Amino acid sequence: MYRKRNDMRSNGIIKKAGPYAYILPAMLVFAVFLFYPFFKTIYLSLFKTNKMGQAKLFVGLGNYIELLQSKSFYNSLTVTVIFVVIVVAGSMALGLLAALLCNRTFPGIRAFSTAYALPMAIASSSAAMIFKIMLHPSIGIVNKLLGLNINWINDPKYALVCVALLTAWLNSGINFLYFSAGLSNIDESIYERASVDGAGAFQKFFRLTLPGLSPIMFYTIVVNIIQAFQSFGQVKILTMGGPGESTNLIVYSIYRDAFFNYRFGSAAAQSVILFAIIMGLTLIMFKVEKKGVSY
Image (cartoon, rainbow, N blue to C red; front, side, top):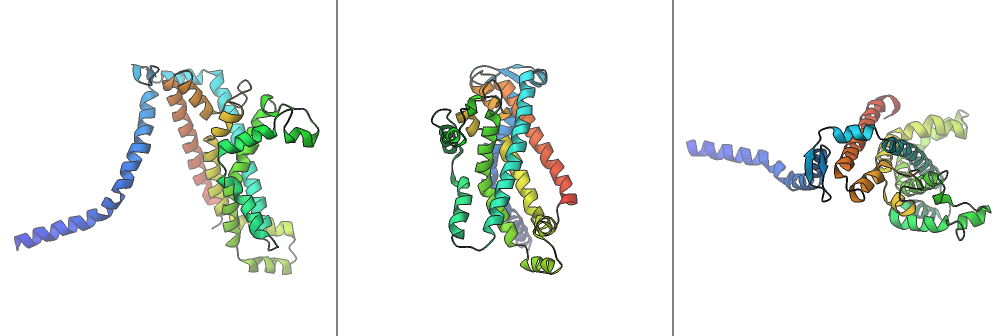
C-alpha cells in the first residue's frame, strides 16, 4: 500500500514536471544567447576593460556618468530619435498605402502584392549598396532624374534622411503584410452601410478603416520602433556614422566604441541605456494601448 502511494506521487510529479521538460531546451538557448549576454553587458558597464574586453578596473557608475557628460553621446541620442521618427512614420505610411492599394481587386494584383512585399526579402546590406550607387553624385540615377548635383550621403543635411528613407522602405514590406491581414479582417458590410448613409471615402477611412486597423497598427508601431533603434547595417555601409556625426546612431556609436576605440565598458553602458529607452517606450505604449486601440 505504501509503495503504491509512492508510485502515485512519483507519477504525479512526473506529470506535473513533464510540460517543463519540453520548454527546457528553449530555456537553455535563451540562457546562453540572451540572458548571459544581457547580464554580462551590465557587468562590463561597471568596469574599465582592456583591448580584449576583459574587466580590469571597477568604476561603478563611472561609465554612465562619463556618457551623460559627453556631447557626442547626446548627439547620438538626438540623431537616433530623429532617425526613429522618420523610419517609423515612413514605413507605416508606405506599408498602409500599399495595403490599401492592394485591397482592391484588379488585374495583376498578385504581381503588385509581391512587389510591395519585396523589401522584406532584401538584406539591408544589399539594399544599402544599391542605394549608395543610386545616390552617387556623378553616376547615380537620383541626381540624373532630378537634374541635381548633390552628394547625398556625404552632406550632413541629407545623409540622415537618406539612411532613414532606405530603412523605412526596407521595413515597409512587413508592414504591408500586417496591414493587408488587418484589412482582410474588416467586414465589408460596414462600408456598404456607410455608403448608404452618405459617407465619403475620407470618412470611411478615418471612421472605419483606421479604428479597424488599430490593433494591428499598435503592434506594428511597437515592432517598428524596436527595429529602428537597432538599425546598423545601412549606417555601416552608407555613411559609417558620418559625415561628422550626423548619422552616428547610438547602435553605431556602441559598435565604434567597442571595436575601434576598445572602450568595451563605455559601449556596454550605452547598450544598457539603449535597452532602458526601448523598454521604457514599450511599457508606455502598452499603457496607452487601452485608450487608443479598438478591439
